[in-house]
Length: 312
Ligand SMILES: *[C@@H]1O[C@H](CO)[C@@H](O)[C@H](O)[C@H]1NC(C)=O
Image (tube, rainbow, N blue to C red; front, side):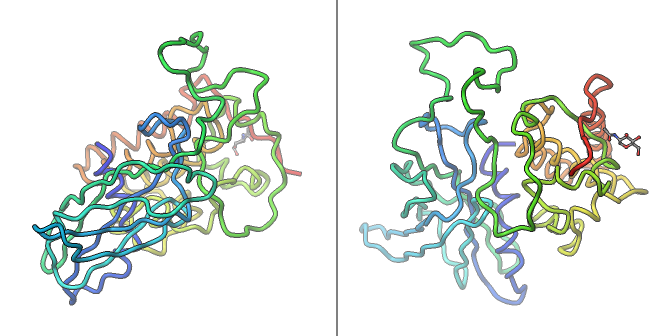
């Protein structure tokens, strides 16, 4: 699945929650990333940028501005705007218009809006990811191809001695209950834990990026909201069993937790979100297959164990 689709899945939730089916409207949604390596692409080092302003502007055939709207990205780097009626937004574009949290020295090019679907009186437009960049690429970014770096043992690990970058990470969260500090090296260690270990209270401190009461709809996006409702929390998702869909959600949630917990885990967090959404768009077989793939990753393929130690 390419980026526009991917962010379509993850970005529309807020908009979807606000949509009242009786009103005609158009929704525009997308994600802003901090392009830490300033390579113009989204790589493993890049993360969704919180608190950045995005503007959508529309020009008529004479180049006159006909519409303008600005919105700020949420914790997950997503923004969504709603336009009343069903205006044709295909000639509009979105652009980063304000600096985001420590990553706003330069902004990437504007992107067109793409009509994803039109249903009843509702239109959904998606925007390719917008980029915002720091003034300098981060020190751990791969150098340009002119100065090849020695092949690392694990591609995503930074060289030893350097401070390990926190990646991939979500932007700052609102205040959470105090969590006991984790040994920083644990993120670099290979670990894969099955869902039941994630539900055990003695390992609560391993929940770092997300909390058990966060809604799966917020974390995984619109398609997940449609399938599982907006009440289901991550904690509830971990207890799911019985049918393929609940099993898939349980294993995807576990995989997401594992991906935040260990850089060596088989999935990147965005990969978990993408694969879950893809499976839900597919057949029951796709649901079973993806659920099984997550389950195998969560079991460490019989090679990687669960490195939890009880929290203090
Ligand atoms: C995970 O849970 C199992 C079953 O409850 C338990 O035996 C095991 O010790 C746990 N693993 C870790 C690393 O804590």
